[in-house]
Image (cartoon, rainbow, N blue to C red):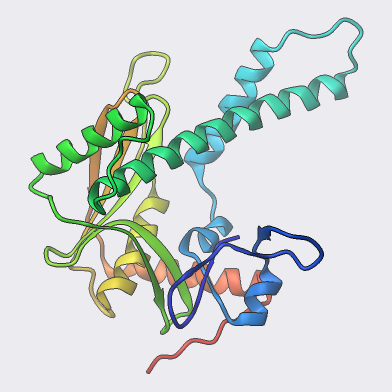
Length: 258
């Protein structure tokens, strides 16, 4: 689970293990103890995500079609292997997506991308070229934030405070489906996520007059974007999602409307 320090906005994803050396993932109990704020992505896990669910279904179907059945194998054992194969594919895809995110961030924070593999470097450079063509050149990368008015936090991929642009990067394996048609990449939850980010970073209470953009890149380096037209109802949706999260988790982090 992802949380953020209410005072410093520092990410609190891991905590030291109490019984052995090393770190473990943060839990809701840790957040309660320290008063940490939940992340936007953690909060939005309570919403249905049609795109993600369709991806999981497709991976399970593909695993079922491609895994040979072992002679005499019980149905339950085959089902376990199919689930494991589908999860492993999703895990590897997530790791690839994280690498691309890290490489894009490295371009804009000046770290350089020489240490990433060629495929990841190519994707990151094509994202930069695409943004350059849009007239967007200067970003703060991986900006952590908290919104003390509502008690949530997060980390934004790219922010241009001067031009008031919020940009979130999404990765996908392929931008075309099996029929060589463009996949649907932009989903309503992406819009809600950006509304929450912008509301916190730009302090907007009754309007959403910042630019909210999703950049989509696949592993071949194909880049496209979608710019959302936000209004205050988009933040209201997030605000109510946050309330549902608090009720489900029975955790009401201290927030100030001052």
